[in-house]
Length: 361
Image (tube, rainbow, N blue to C red; front, side):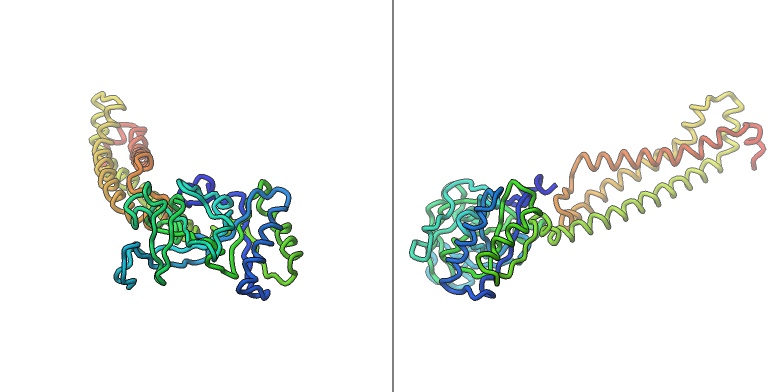
């Protein structure tokens, strides 16, 4: 499931391990932090089975959000009211996009030369490019400004992703080089050919060899997604349970209505059978009214379901308000269950001797 959702996440959590490392708690602050982070990346890359390693702060969809106002390059007064947009901000190492499997649509990724002595650069997502520059095609090479007046050149465009919640609309996001905006606490993403759970002990031992005092929290990226997926999963389960209960109530109501309708027409059905009517004709007469009600109820239910599904899309991830396959399946299922519930009392009545039916008052 998670692999199938990669294009919507903007990253691939499959076979990836997350390690939260807070260097400040081990005394690595200021200029000491980037040097230690390079050592960490090199050491973990040497672990057998590791394909790529990257750092990010914060981790998308999990470790909270950091936002920043951005301004067009022509904006002179950098006041909040003049901001072009408020965007998600991520600080990443050069190998982050490879490790996260976040596709770069155009331009380049970062290198270790993009440090504090180099011109300020950024990789932005497609929504950022459209919102700030008007198009994705012409965004690379353009500049924008941060709240402190720093001019930043766009060197790459990353695919659109999910950053705060799974049901959010496309949001603008920018990725800055970690060396140009140092952070002591970062999330390490380890992409490997081995099972992510098996990588945890190897990563922990490797980091502890560098410094036994490093505080490290390690978990698979798929497992970390349990938190943002929790609300959608609980909503889907709750709606599923309520749907089953509603279906049971509907079937019970249809069965009771059909039984009552057939019982009121027992003499009529007995007369039809006595006069030589075939079972098929009598059954059609018994089911005709119920079938019309069932068809009308299904049409009304379909309309109300489409309207209610608009609310569903804001709760359950990847729910669509007009999925033709789902709508057709629901309607056919309810029609089938309704016909069965209607047919049972009618068939029971027809199995009785017509003479007995004629004596019914």
